[in-house]
Length: 464
Image (tube, rainbow, N blue to C red):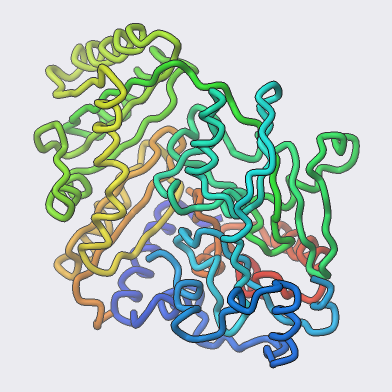
C-alpha cells in the first residue's frame, strides 16, 4: 500500500504530465491509465443488422443515435440476449455527471443511455419505500417524495442532472453523507440486466434469506450488470433545517469547528462542508454570486436539522461561541429561515459551474485523512505554479472527501484514490497501486462470473 506522501507525489506528477500532453478528455484519461499502448479488444463492430435489431427492440427509429452530432453528448462526459452471439461492448450511461470517464466509451462501444427510463413506479408513505426506474433524475425523486413529507437519503450538487441508477452504480455519498451514511444501506431492492440479457428481479424485500446480490452490484459502475429499477427507503422530513457559515483563518479552526459541531449537534448534524478562498472568489468573479462573509482563507458550512428551528439556531450559536473561546472573534452568518439557508448554500453549490468558466478543469475526487485535508491543494499550487489559473479545494469535511480542482486557461500545452465518483477509466492504474493483489484477483473472478464475455463497460475499473 503506497504511503500518503507517495500518493500526493503521484498526483502532482500525474497533473504535470496531463498539462503537457492534454488534447481532449480521452487523451487525459489514457495518460492517467498509461493507455497509450491500449488496443481495442476483440468485440464485434456494429453493423446494419445490429441497428435493425435495436430499432425493433426500441420500437422507435429516433431512439437509435448513430450520427456524430447526435451522439456527441453521450461520448463526452461532464468536464438483451442478442449479445450472446454478437459480443457487442456496452457502456451504460446515466446522467453523465461523473469525473473519471466511467460513463463514456473508450473506443467504439455502444452507449446505453438510461435517460428515458425515468418512470416513478410507486411510493408507499407508510413504509417510505420508493420504486422507480434507474434513469430518474435525483431532483425529481426529491420533489416527488417531498410531497409526502419524505426526503431521499442522498443529495448532490448535481441533483438536477444525475440519475439514481448512476448514484447506485458509483455508491455516491453526497453532501449529507454525515447524516445518512452510505446510500447502499437504504437500498431495499434492485432490478438488473445481466450481460446475457437475463433480467434479475430483486426488488422485493423477501430476498433477505439468500445472498444479498444487490449489494454486490452496487458500486461496480456497470461492470457486473446494468441497474434498471431500484427500491429505496426514504426518510421522513425534519420540520426545519438551519445552517451557519464560518470564516476561518487557519486549518486548526476548521478541525476545531468539526469537533465542536459533532459534540453540540450529534446526530442532528446533516452536513459540514469546507471551501477555500480561491473557490469562493471564483464563484463571485465568474457567476456574480457573493459570499455573505468577507474574504477568509477558508470557509466552513455547518447544517443541522430538527423539529424546532429555535433549537437549531441556538445550537449553531453555541458552536460559534465555543469556537470563539479558542480562537477569538469568528465572522459568521446563521440562517434564520429557509430562504437564508438556500443563500448560504449558493456559493458551495456553484463552485463547479464557476470552474468551468475558468478554463479547462482537471478534477480529482479523493479521500484524504482529515488532518491533511488541504495539504494536497498546497502541494499542487507549488508544483504547478503559474501554469494554472486556479487551484482550489472543497468538499465534505466529515468523511475526508475532497475535490481538488485545477483550472488551466491554455490547454494546448498540455487516503483513497476515489471517494464518490468511482474508478471509471481514469483511475484504473491507481487502483492497482492501492489494492492488494488478492483483492484484484477476487474482483476479476466476480467480474468474469457476471460478465464472461467482458462486454459490460469494458476498460473500466479492471482493464485486463
